[in-house]
Length: 492
Image 1 (cartoon, helix red, strand yellow):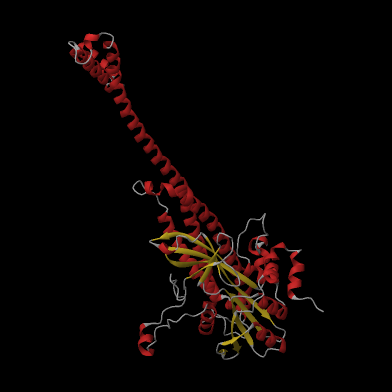
Image 2: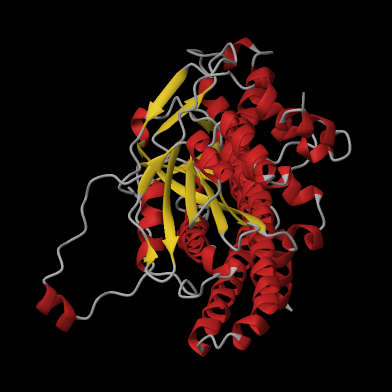
């Protein structure tokens, strides 16, 4: 009996430890029925894509095994272990494609192997005809008053438990960051046809976080479709003249899952699909554009948090108790997050540059239009812009840490000075009573000078001038040398 795809992954893990995340996903996940969503279109040449069709990975694999008559563009949403087993064995897919999609967490290296994005050298990642596009998706978790009990670490309640981080509230809104991934693969078949497989995560509507017993039993449901924090549309707006003639209706506001949304864009506009055998970058165009749109929103969020962490003298005293427990820790987290974000963006840009250079010459030989080739130059420009923005925000966040520390130390110094001034006043009061106590002791030796006696007034005549002289000398403390110098100049 031939070994299964799971057994193959398990054996390969001994050679490449970074495949451990995929092996655990296949072996240790609860064996529930596959709940993934599979949509695909068939590519007719000429004629372009057919209408959208719903299917399952088993039906898709059976169609491939029986022999395709048309190329297929398929999207799998919410990948299940059974889907990996079925598609991996049917299409003979490199396990690093699935592992790169599943492994998005950055765990300590002493506890678990790093993901392929970190474990493999860039030359090995970008040379494959598949790519895992890792990026950060911004989530609006709702009113912060209802979520104050929710911890910093959350996870997506789906087949792949993506990490979600709950950030400090902005203007009363709780913000979350989801580590997500879109993976693109093109498989060329012997008969000249091809299969493009795209893996996407579902909409982040349900999140879980651990209870006191470390069991993920608490669930939060915050619908994110349509997006609560809007990103920009990828395509140009129709001209008013076109809108006036065709009377284009507003987009349907009903929730659309990510797979259907991607297929709709694929059917409408993709560079390079007019060719009988489109390039790999043409098939990855919309996933890259979608990731860039989310990266743009992420950059704007970083800029907003730079403003949030700016301390000033009026606001700093009220935030001193949060400085060490929250703000300083958050800045260290942002530093690590920026490093990871830059690495993801740089790998994406290198991948596009590699395949652009590799596919440019064949495209020119086939007579591809020059504007199609410039699409990738514009895409690289967008990626470089995002790298510069995040790097600039990272430097700003890095500079905030010593500034905040210095400001807190300065405020503490002001407090110490104020406390010293209070102690100084108490010292003056104590010193004022010293001569009174001393003279009281002197007069207590003779009975006529006691209270109610004949010479009690002598006590006041002696005590009050003595106290006044001592207080005067205290007030002149530090100024006596200058006063003495002034007197010498006057009488000289």
